[in-house]
Amino acid sequence: MAAPRKYPDELRERATRMAVELRQDPATRQGAIQRVAEQLGMHPETLRGWVRQAEIDGGVRPGTTTEDAERLTQLEREVRELRRANEILKTSAAFFAAAELDRKIK
Image (cartoon, rainbow, N blue to C red; front, side, top):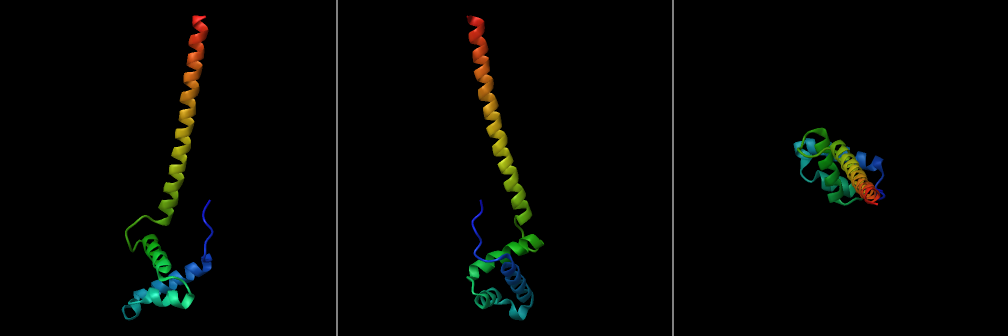
């Protein structure tokens, strides 16, 4: 279960959009994240992380996109479940094999 978010999604989208737009203009690029963060009352590093992820998702910056990260998490969860199921099947097969051998000996 994910932790509750401190900032609503609307504020996150608005802040990210504002910072990205300001960073596109060379005249306002310097300190854009700091200014937007102060205007909206959030820590600059929070906004910087959002902008970085938005750039990755937009293909501007290399990295793992949000969609890929979610898919990877889903696949890892599925692998864990399958490994657990395989372990249960191996244990039960060994149990029944031992029971069959005991029955043949008697």
